[in-house]
Length: 219
Image 1 (cartoon, one colour):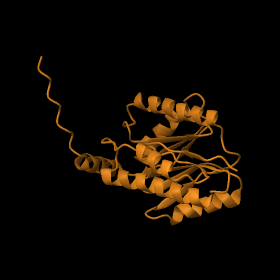
Image 2: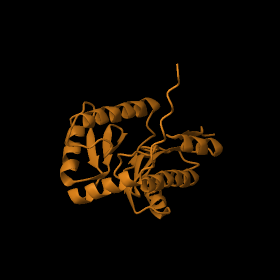
Image 3: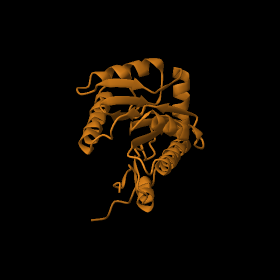
Image 4: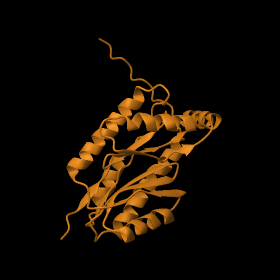
């Protein structure tokens, strides 16, 4: 009997995974499950992507419940990125078809590798590598904070987001120079500076108002 393994990031995904106790080996990586004000998507788009990630993961979990697979699902502006490992080309093609047919998905980038599932230590190292790439971005003024999502699998760094062509080139170059990165794959949506600025303004205007500050207790 196969061991049950569901990996999720974010409280909503963890709760859903706890309810569904099917014998599956499908990992869900929800990049940025918390709404981010500085994201270039509106809050509505961010929520759509979270819903897509969970839905596609559940559909893949049902489809591959009897197979040993490790699949990560990320979505940005309804573009779904699949990473991880599956046993053969048939499984890879099937996973891509399931994601493509899922509700509200506009495009699928299928980067699944035909290999045994990566180890926990490998995935931990990939998570740490994503953090190093993020730190490099923070120290690069040409890259706006939180404008790029980072997914790392087998030391391959995937970059998602809405960026200008120049931002995309700089982000890829910076990521490629981080120690331990084996390859950088750009999964960007490229837009003009005007469109990027317009989307950023839309996201800011749609952001929920900050909660009122708590009163300072009297001494």
